[in-house]
Amino acid sequence: MFTAEDGAMEIIENATGKYQKQFDEEFPLYEYIYVTGDDNYDFTVDGAKQLAAFINGRIDIDKPVPVPDDYYERDY
Image (tube, rainbow, N blue to C red):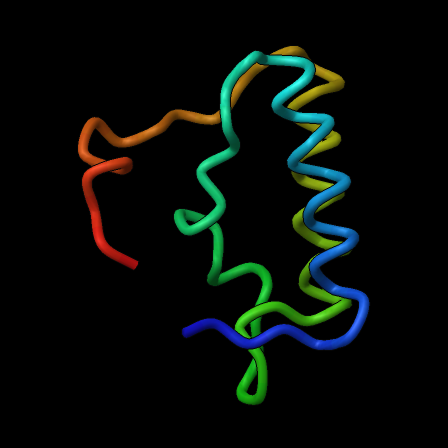
């Protein structure tokens, strides 16, 4: 089970939605969970803002992130 600080998931959902619209594929969120968390939450507001900036940067350069071949078969 993942934990989220109030407001973090809204930021992440907005950013990943833009990513999906741009690239017509889902953003591999759990590959980047290390960016979003701290000792108390898996998804913090500050981490969500950092992830959103990263995603927006990828959109700006029109380059999706690499997705490991087994990403969608993994259990998280």
